[in-house]
Every structure is written in structure tokens, then in C-alpha cells.
Image (cartoon, helix red, strand yellow):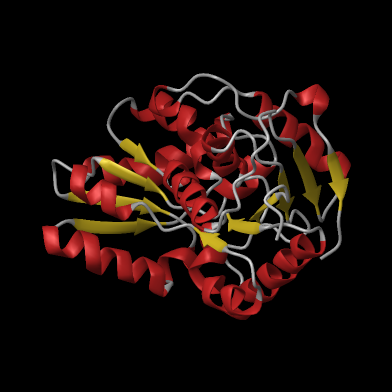
Length: 282
């Protein structure tokens, strides 16, 4: 497998762009194929077998494009599909782990919440990380769901009045219960950070998996001698299973927005004018 081959990134829609930003920061010389399954988003209330099938089809489409590794940048897909996908494909497959461990270590109140989809919350992966990293510390973990949030992000309405209203209804009980660490357990949710901060200030420390999965991807590529040795910036090509016309303005807006979490303000995705977005069938 060539080290110059692209890295594949898969999400149910545009949420994985939050992970892509971290990958571009950590691996600026890698070419990336980003596949958003916008024809089938959201995944959060689909059956386990349906999620596995959609994930396998997406990864197979990336394999056909010659990728050297795939990051499953979708918490719902990772919750159910990683073992099946890893057994089927020969290249490395990296998945997201809900960021319960750093949240449990950082909490001052002993109360952590995970904002995620029903599929993610009921998956074995979530149960494992709570058992391994929260329960030994005596940390209480509460799962919370709002199925309206992913469609709002997909529609480019992450900081809209409707999104803020949904966040107030969903997160106010957590604030009142003393939660101080909020795990963003869906890759769409980092795009809600400005709205959350506008409504709740510094009540919650927002924790997501993007930076961690980017560091892990670098380690996996290094171990497999798959790091791209070029010194020029890598390219990003966006593939969507739904309408290119519908997805383009949302991808452009999220790509153009500077990322400010963790003190970073520089842009790591291409400028909107240079976006390459193609249609793909999986």
C-alpha cells in the first residue's frame, strides 16, 4: 500500500468535518477523501444492522477509491460497526471512542453528561468506557438525547434560534443537576459549541474525541509506515451520497468557519471557493 494514497474519512453527513479539522491540523500533508452519507443521515435512530450495512458500504466505496486507511468519524457507526468493518478490510480502520475518560478525570462535581444519539448511548462501546473510566472514579455519567440537533447541523442551522431553544431544553436540567463536563458524543455536536456557550457560558467544559482520534490516526500511519512524505499541503475531496447542491453550502460554511476550541483559531479546511465536492453511490 502506497504512503501517498489518501486517507478516507467517513461520517453519516457533515458532522465528521469536526474530526476532519483535527486531522488536517495533525496531518497537514495527507490527502483526504471525505465521504458524507447525506442520503441516509441521520443514523441515530436506525437499527444496528442498518447502521452496519451503511457503514460497510461507505468504507467499500472508499476502498474502491484507493484509500490507505479509514477514519470512521461517526460515533453511531463506530458504536456498532468497527469490529465488522475491521474484519472485512485489510487497511487500518480507526474509530471514535466517546471522550468519557478525559471528562471523568477532569470533573470537579463528579457529574458528567454525554450528549449523543440513542444508538451510541446503548452501544457496548459506551458501556465499556463508562465501566473502565468513570465508575472506578465514582463519577456519575448521564446520557442525554435530542434527535433534532443533527438535522439542524446538517441544514446549516447550528447556531439558529431553533437550535438554541433545543439546547436550552436539553441541557438546562444537566446544569441544574451540577454537571460540569459535557461530552459531545456525536461529531455533529462540536458545531453546536458556539450556541452552547452563548446559552450556558462556562457552565460546561465541552469535550469531544476529534483531537484524540487525529493523534491516534497519526500513530497508526506511523506504525504502518504509511505517513505521506510530501511536504506540500494535502488536498481534500468531499464525496456525498445525496444532493451535491444541498450539501455544498453547508460544507462550505462549516469549512470556512475558523475553529476556536482549545485555543485554536486558524482554519484547517480549504477555503470555500476551492472545495471539491462530488456525488458518489455506496
